[in-house]
Amino acid sequence: MTTINLFKNEKDSLSIPAGRSIFFTGQTGDVMYVVIEGEVEIMVNNQLVETIREGGIFGEMALLDEEPRSADAIAKTDCKLATVNEKRFLYLVHNTPYFSIEIMRVMANRLRRENTVDRSTKAIRASSTVGAQATTRA
Image (cartoon, rainbow, N blue to C red):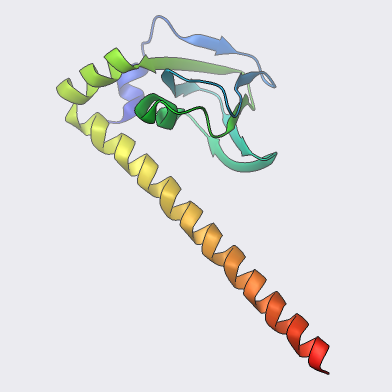
């Protein structure tokens, strides 16, 4: 079972028009979101880091660690979203173990992708420093 199947028939979904902000960096958050329809862009420092599509989740970090939001979420298209508060999250984890695995996979993929970007950035900086040092010596 995929995450979207758990929320496909959501009665209390949110309709968000394209271009509307869903949340901002620094805001407190007590829910995560599941994209039932549409696309949501996740931005960090005005840089696109991910586009969440149907069946995807976002906002899970603030729900899990009770820290402020670490990114901006903006509807790229008209969206239909399901919200998951802590009570519902715990119910889903308890009654649908696959849901827990899906959340962990999403978080692991995001962390792995961030680590790859971070390593690439460090490698570029290191090669730039080496090139600058070689130029200075010449």
